Image (cartoon, rainbow, N blue to C red; front, side, top):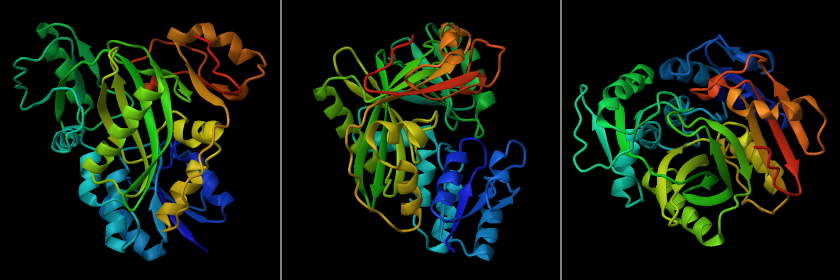
Length: 369
């Protein structure tokens, strides 16, 4: 039987486990025991930290895995590349993985690749030089996702507190300051095989706005103009090449100004979370993104046949979106999947603060906010 190592075992990886088992593949999940919901569904579970590259490599060598992958988490990316390189399996290079999981290294690579990015500077030992940067600014940890530690500052007096907040969230204790780009937010899902990249879907994003910019909703397909979408696709390919991403799923994020300028914010060498990769892409395009991610890790690939299938999206429940509660509690003709996880709604600072989700599928965009 084909054996697949899955790095991470939280609810984020559960769709991947289910898809692999549906494909008749033996699943081996690695993660901390706390929150490892996949432990009850995978064929084998190993309570090894996803950051323990050597420990996971040793176990994977013992198992004789045929492939290794994850979805929706940046923290697993370097371990996957380390193990795959060591065992001669399909993955992006370890060097590429390091660039795609460190926002500072990523921005340096983007700059070398002539990608369109905001001005940025590294905070070193609490010191920084913003020179001719224009306020407002964004301050963020170099190595976190899910809006953790991200703050918008409008005046210099706010910078120190924002740096401290970002530093607390950062594993590496590295922080970036960059100019804030005012505009629309989108994300892009792609699949790559030997450096050939295919754009699968562009997703419109709704966030809380300043200061933390946590996602409240996602919609596919994007409603932006064709000319802007073309520029986004061009920048996406440049960013993937700059990071030397050659295999598997990727999730890129961009800001679009009122003038139609496209700025790359970041790229992850894994499919997007928030149900974007695991659910919305297949609903809106008919393309089985999960299966393709698994196939590529096993050395198999078929070029995507993307077709417009419908409109799909997800809304998240919080104090900011409490007006959605009636839609959560009633039957709607656009319902695909929904769940209230916590009746105690609160204002959110990161994605973990959200209290539920509603995924829709329809023949038109569903506007609820």
